[in-house]
Image (cartoon, rainbow over all chains, first blue to last red; front, side):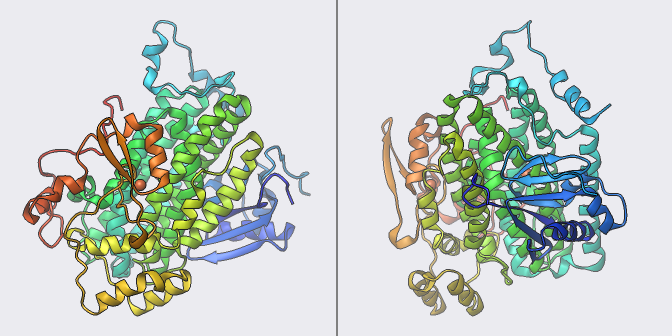
Length: 105
Length: 488
Ligand SMILES: [Fe+2]
Ligand SMILES: [Fe+2]
């Protein structure tokens, strides 16, 4: 648990659809116990401490290229800080200096 | 060109320090921030969005929104939206359309007067976002007018209502206050407190309710609005952090602004969004209190505020009072609305047996406090208010919180006038900046107190049954909630 905050949960709420499903599947591969809650029109994805979205994993599920900048189209809410958002990874963390994971292979 | 270099050209390279005009001509004193930073040019917006990406992404968002609207019209979804939900939209859309437009005006001003180049460009982009949100709200209104048999009206046909009915003065005064602040206060108030802590109640919880009641257009509009909000929140968080990190003399100001806007947001959302989650919809996926717990308490207080506590930031000073009001707030405002139902253009219904069951389940003391009121209504009591409610001189909502029997009304005497406040929070806000909030017009209760119903109907531009008469020819006179300087 991060000691930086009282409640160390990060997460995103996504507009339901293909991109959302791919992102959720990619995150569940890394964090199988992530909480996934369906509400009308949306999915709420919450995990402890930090969340890393690897573009390559999302692309695998989507079966096409996926530009991380397009995450802005489907994220409606989030908790945590976006500490990295580039072509490879999007990182949500309560540690403001979190620079993400080693590259995925 | 690399994205970082492109971003640099768009922000820092577009900035210059004026040499031909004085500082006063460049940023007049009233718009200059009281915060300090060793070097404003070093501040960077975490999103660093490039204009070409912005245009592409926003265009796609718009295409998707209009695709949902088209489908709604083509296949008849709009006409089938549950009628009770459309009544919610009559209220909510009235508040929202103008609020978004106010926000647009506010951010244009921040873009002009903020001291950091990166804040200016981010605010310019945000101004375009807010303008888009206002236009989406107008499209939504147009869809109901055209496709739903509910007597919906375009914003231009209900402007007098927004400017004059007591229920909307809370919204109007909130935004008129927000767009007349120190530019960094505008960022803290809008981007950190309102957007990070509270807009999820508007744009996530409310669309979930909309979708549950068949309103897919509203769902799409609001989820796409909230996707812009993610950029705004990140800016607010970064500005707060930079202010606290770089100069500890900023702490007191940032804390005051967090405290002030937390209370103002709490009061506004409780009164305007509370009914949209707890009363209007037939199918209710989430209660106002549950949404508040998730987005305000867990995300904002236990997340962001607690993370910033390493720099000395404390939870908002009236947090406990806000939490204490949640059990009764939306029920109280619904009773106020019910008592004024003849002057409202949306239907304020008597809760059905199913509604009451849900309310009891979500709010354990509902029956003990509000049960008798609705039983009396069921027995035929009229409950029509014979006068306008006494409103608070800060939030402009009635002094009826937490609930009518234990309503709070706190007096303050200032420059020979007596002012009344609904709560410690509003009183504190007034006392901190009394000269900003001193009364410039008579409160509506006094203004309308001795007037006959025909005059009041004319004042609100409504027919005797509460329907707005429409048209752009609003009745004579404009009554701003507070003076808005001509420079914006
Ligand atoms: Fe907006
Ligand atoms: Fe108040």
